[in-house]
Length: 339
Image 1 (cartoon, one colour):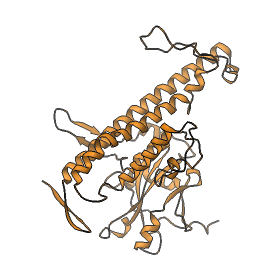
Image 2 (spheres, one colour):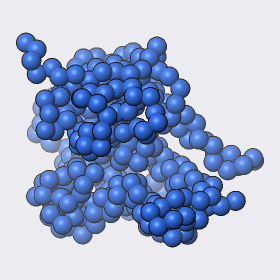
Image 3 (spheres, rainbow, N blue to C red):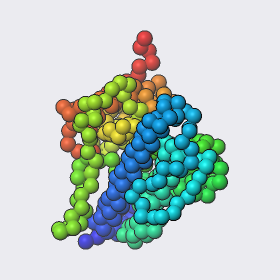
Image 4 (cartoon, rainbow, N blue to C red):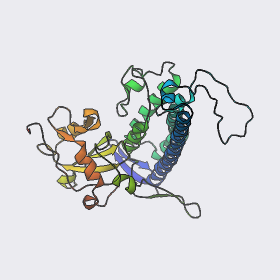
């Protein structure tokens, strides 16, 4: 049954159930592709480690630095093919190294694949289900609009530099300044998922039996116990402003993600004066600063070390039920006067 959404011009019909189903399917397909991306990256890293070990065994520790194993003299495994490229002056270990050609090809494919899902399938379906509701797809559409600019810049720029009218013009996915080399990494993937509100630990069920599919994010508890200082960098923040009828302690918050994949939603109470429309707008300017080790509210003296947010995400005793992970109200405060 269709539900009604009140817009400025009156009531507009929207099939809310179908809308939610489409977003859920889009999220599921994105998570599947992100999981696949991780395994491909893992394979590249494993091949790099094996290649490094083989070079050191054959040529000693100086072999890696001197790149004595140039070209592609080591045949690829698992390929049923009797011919392959023969290269000289193109070290395979460079192409397989972290941040190298292999990883960049995979990241570019992920960006193109995710936006392709949106452009070719889900945007059309959602427009149909939203009916005539103007701007109903926002704010996720703004994130996807930024992804389109980045995709276009990656695929159509010969120099691989961010341009002012494409990746450099992004408002939410501000990954590259104009003129910057577009070097992708998993931080960018986490930021996209966080901005879409798709970093969630509660299982989402897609479809009905016998083809039930489930997706969610799970913390690797063993890896968390083995983590060492300094804590991982903060790579994404999405400001959260609660509804007027919500408890004051949940008025302002932030959805955060760290470079090791830890994420959470932190309720920060009222960090300044009180709740107001002007403060709501100010809070939406929340950003990552200090190279990923602080949360900063531009135009104020509020600067919160990200280590406290990281600890809040991991603290089991402070988690309460709700979408994603929430800590109990955490008061952000001005630390500028402390010595």
